[in-house]
Image 1 (cartoon, rainbow, N blue to C red):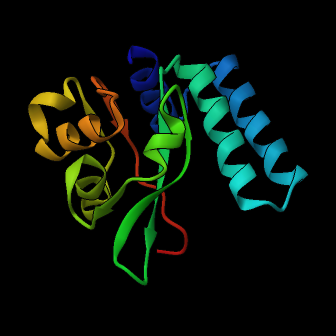
Image 2 (cartoon, rainbow, N blue to C red):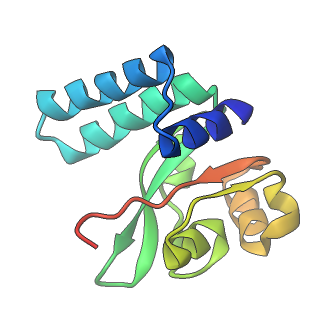
Length: 139
């Protein structure tokens, strides 16, 4: 998770390494190679995971109709299971990050969020260190 924190710090300070720039270039190329939104999300997530050496990752989006969060893309051993999870707005680490519009790094999610424990139990995967970064379009 140190790699993820370093990447976020470098990005905010505009001090990117060659590896960081390469990842951003790969994501940019993916964005230009397809119009399939799900494919774009998945490829971007895969590239990010390579750089930060994450065990698993997910991109959560807002379902405006039901006012819930859902997983649009995921990587890792339990990726198909986590895609079935829906969460109330404002709940858990993801919900709080979206509400506050600020990134957060949680060293041990099991100690911070009861909801994280519930999700972990539901998908049989326990996230430890969590990096959560909100992304907004036209907000």
